[in-house]
Image: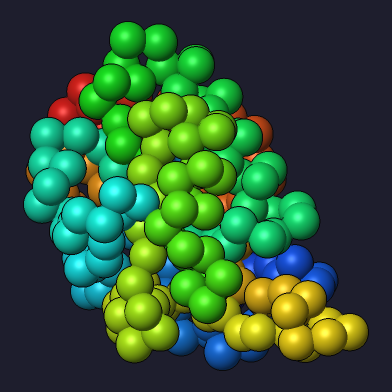
Length: 206
């Protein structure tokens, strides 16, 4: 049973806004949650190490810009009807639960749909959940590169016309500790309490 747990965790994290899971994400390997964390402990993961994207103001960003803070990074798109807004709302609730510690946490939203998600749109969408949240984007090549680095699956699903497509994508987040080390893989839809608890552990230097 222990051997198949990583696969089960991965499948539970996959979601698409058209309700179609992406099998290509099966490359990701997860370890079972430790007794310390509520979410999956991926300390020492050999990927999900960094990114090079632009923020919603056009400023180049990498993980090093946020050293000293715990970083939560989620991949989605602004036209998403369900997974993305609920995740962002959940993270806004996490920030409220953290109280003053929220100032030591940075939430990043990386768009997987640069075709539609302009910096202006990200600037309107992302901080609407919490003014401290930052949206990140790149061109198609940069988006593919960061998705590959983080083992994030995404795929365009055609709609009735060319502009009405949706995106299937991995519905989960990564969490880095204040030293910039990837530590947790957070599944979608569990509510703010487990995430807030895990962030408190990381902020305490665990």
